Length: 129
Image (cartoon, rainbow, N blue to C red; front, side, top):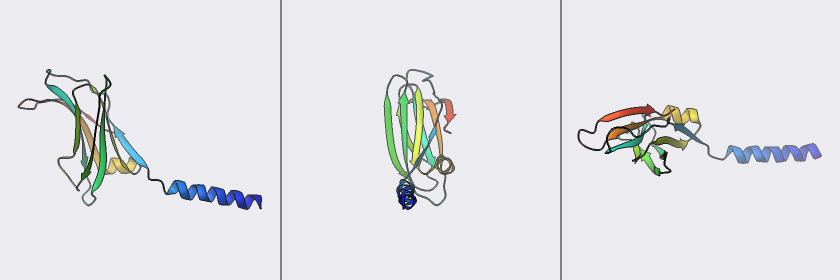
């Protein structure tokens, strides 16, 4: 009787946990703010699937404590992506529903350091993994 109760409890826990959505994330290395005073770091997540509309959250964490976040719904193959920026060094995290492997297969992420003045020169870029 006791083993039957244990089995029921374990089965219930497995069913509950199996129904919880998981979120995977990709993270860039830290990128310092370079270039002129008019430069900024920008994080961009792009949906690389050809058939799925996906929701993604892009977060930037600044070295000096700054934070910025953007959540977007991206169409398949959306070339503009979901972007956020900081006028500080830091790193970027891209989060979406699914395992890390699923997120890696559905999104590409990059953080760039660019000038905010014409011709918008890109000084450095790092990839999210």
